[in-house]
Length: 90
Image (cartoon, rainbow, N blue to C red; front, side, top):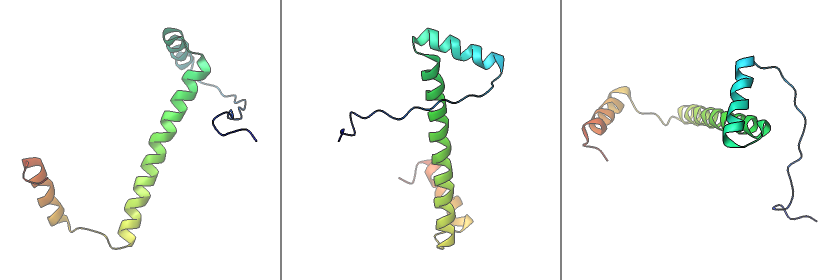
């Protein structure tokens, strides 16, 4: 059995169309960073997915809190926020 650190991710071909100026930007970035276009595209996609997955998880956590009744009245939240902005709350 091959250890996890030695295994390579299975790679799959993907094909899609993008705007010509986006393709040019990818090519320029790849050249400037001495990376492949595939690397630049994969990094961009992974970054996008990470941000959006985090956002979805955060929204779901907030909804779960709401369903569980873990809420603060607006007036109390406003006081906490104003105190934080004023530097009186840690």
